[in-house]
Length: 220
Image (tube, rainbow, N blue to C red; front, side, top):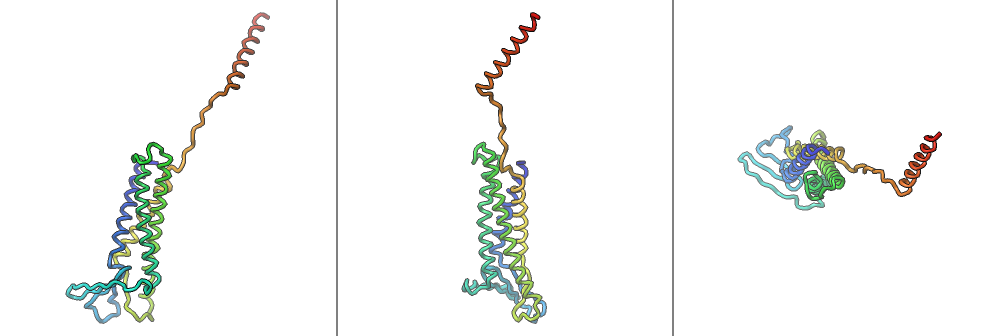
């Protein structure tokens, strides 16, 4: 595997892991829309963990969701997927560091290093898929409520936290794809020909026969 590809994949995976860690606590997953509303002095915004409001003076008031079971199903699923993304990214970073050719963790066994690096790529792909599913599912519910003319509640728009999540998912998938399709998951062993005792004996007998035949023909 090309060391440059390893470094690029590690960089992409590490940056995506940091970004998913930034997206989870970000408060602006959805922001209240001013379209069709009369009161514009306050702004509402939410994420997976709390709901906040700010007034025209810049005072912020946040309230955590009181009950987990009372939340909508997509919020609970998004929480679980984002946590799974962080865990997968952690394993991906560790596996990639161990599987790099410049690492001394696995010694000089480059086949084992390639397999470990490929495992790290799989974790990166899992991280990217979990992140993309979580933020896309959350964004789909925002847009569904926004474009529903019969929805009576407060309408929201997509916040910056979702964009960070999408960027993190794309980087994780790119890094995982680089490792999965570029690492050497196995190498073919070279087979060397080693003559056996019978082969040596047969070769010696053939040589003696050739010499004896040449001797007999020399005197004819």
